[in-house]
Length: 90
Image (cartoon, rainbow, N blue to C red; front, side):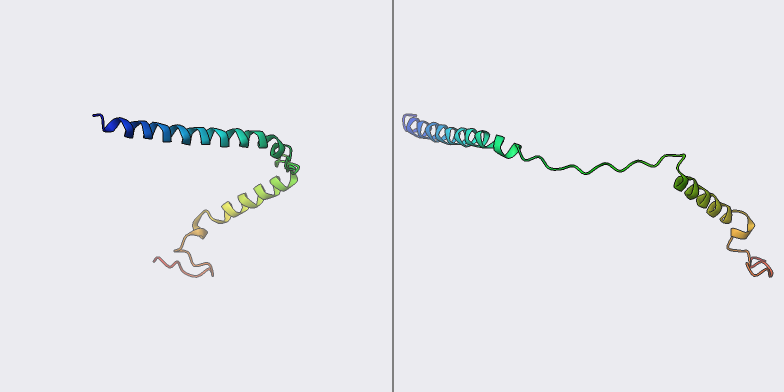
């Protein structure tokens, strides 16, 4: 047991030295931080969000509805011959 006491004391001393060094580094970084905090980046102006009453939104909605109308009904099926001939399914 007596042989372990010097080892424990050395470990405690080493841990204390490491802790003191880390605290000293933290303190020096905190003193340097205010100088770096003064440089504020410039922020770009925000882009306006589209409004439902906007002309571009209305045009996009009309195009979307037209596309949906083309994709529905018998003419949109794979079994329909678009040249006006006989149906491909029978």
